[in-house]
Image 1 (cartoon, rainbow, N blue to C red):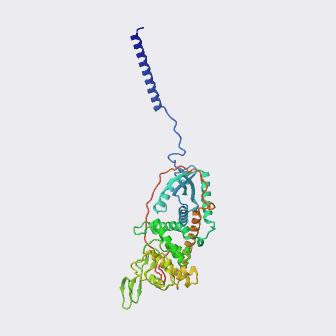
Image 2: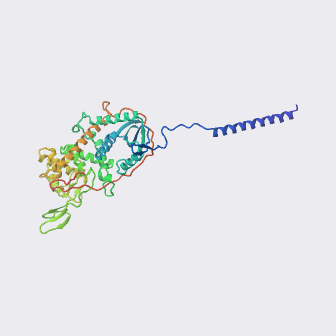
Image 3: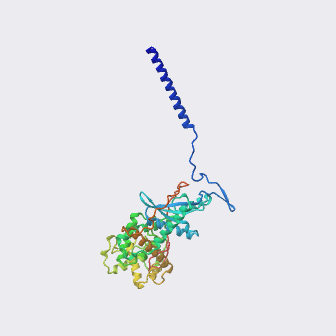
Length: 439
């Protein structure tokens, strides 16, 4: 065989081999692309199937237990405050508060506290109900979830554990806590109370703005300083602030007026009579102290023998009162002085002193006193447990130290709602006490 024939045959074999490989590759690619594959079946049907239950049509979306995650926090105190608030609103509306659960799970960023509402497993009723909560600004979003019966039992147990932990008396009482321990927890409490004020939730354009964390921290420091300076029961002092304005700096009762024999400096004169004059007596700031009551409080301050240099400078009232330009920080001092004076007048009887703070010395308001007492007990419980949670000692117990099961898959996209504010509450008690009204 000649060399030339050998090379021709070699080239022919090479071309045949290349063509065969290309044909094989083309067939393999086509087979890969067109061969039918097994798709993994979804855990639950993608589209819920309608059913008839009783005499009505339902659209179930969970094979066992349906729920909706409505809030998530990394701070346990904030989570528990929201949890209790939602349960309180549910009870007030005639619902079943036991269907609201607080759970905890470990994440790479630390514990995550989540609030769930157990649903009816019917899209036709659950979605409108959750949308209504959104519309009322009680929740900001929701995610529909499906639980197994085991998950549900675990979350119920965990939520019950939070109830037990926060209901159990703590070793340290409020009176034994120092300012350093109280300040962060109190600031968070003030923020939450302002955010859940009814006027804020109603969404009015004229509503007060909830406190920022910086504003709440400063107000918390002022409240602690004033309570210590006047030896006030901190829980009741906080109760007064919550009943008045939920700690927000906004004037109230703008149309309230009183008749006087003669006008005084800084009075806003509304009407003149033959022997008397009508002046504006609206309520001021966080503590809703009326203009006339503030005059009386300033006279108490001028005759007070306490050493006011022990108070921070921003809390010291000026020697000359300008009713048209009163700093809200100084109003905290005046509120403390008024409460201290009433406690002294009634020989330390807190109920009478609190009632007189709203209704006057001659006609204390027992309903107002009962409201303040309720808030005071709530604030005491929350602050005592919050400071126990912040305790870095190894003996400090966390009611959510166990790891829950893996969370169930979400079956609906998250929803969001806008935030909003509203108008100011007010009342018209006698000038001898701060003008206040229950929210």
